[in-house]
Length: 448
Image 1 (cartoon, rainbow, N blue to C red):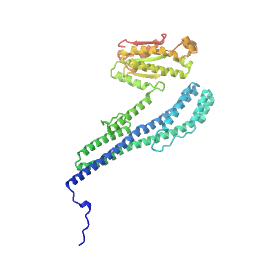
Image 2 (tube, one colour):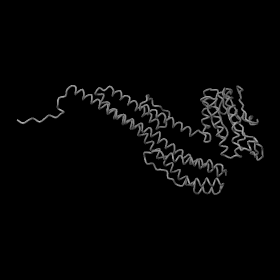
Image 3 (cartoon, helix red, strand yellow):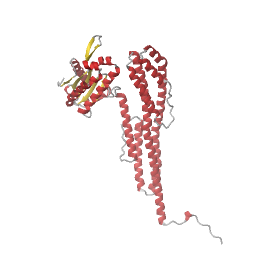
Image 4 (tube, one colour):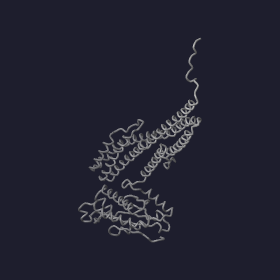
């Protein structure tokens, strides 16, 4: 009688301990698989979000700045040709240097897709030649060179930059679209793994599934809001784990994009202070809320004569320096929510509280009078004045720059409005302009 064949191992009878061990291993395997997959998906989500902030959004911002830079170069060039002012060459060269820095920053970004790189071309050489012509005051040659060579080359280069902008925008849109799709795919796969684990009575897997589901839902919604241009978002994810960090990345990214968007629209290119739009918005906000505030208007006296004598760049330095004086005065004596704005030219405004106005005005005048002589030649500084023709062609003696500070208290007006406050400041300024030296005047009359 022949011996029977051996039974396969799987048909051997299992003991209770082995069944428990097998069930435990099965639950552990599903739980481990779910954890590994969820962490992998989370890592991919985090990496993609970081790329959106550090590469895609950064690249798009740099390209937009490149376009603004080229248009600014063109505008300065036209101003120089129209005004025949060689002093604009310094500003022109500054924009050329800024252009090179933007290109270098763009080239350092690790783009994952092979974008069409900006060709070197001859735009840099042509811009340098234009700067030389402007510096030598060869206006006719510069105009012909601009029309025949530089303008067409710049237009072609702008087309190339805009083409790169379009590629970056398309890549960004694709990345933003891929993020929720990846989240949904990871959600479905992880849900399946955890569902099997739940069938095996794994309470721990159930808790992980709930958290994973909730996190993905919030992050997916935040991604959709961000892709639609809504920067006011903050996914409600607490904790210091990967989900919490990812939520922090989203919030930081949205806040940074919002700041960049507002700054690019509002900031003054000379002082980097908020411009008319931000000033008017803040003024209207305070008026509508019935907040009594001090509108401190600052204007430089005899600035045109100084600018004519020392040139555009020196005038720009004075404008920037005055902005720094205002910011320091408000930082030392003002409130946290005070606003320092640059209306334009040599006109500024500070929005503060009435009780802070006089101290701020005094410090502005003291610091301005102390430091402004440094912006004059030794001869003019010693004399305390210089002779020059005024706007009517009459030779006059102009003293060193002084500052007039006119302050209107909104609560003293019957119907405060930006127009009414502006009229009152203009009236005070007219009076101050007739006084020698730097002066301030605070109109405290009520019910006007």
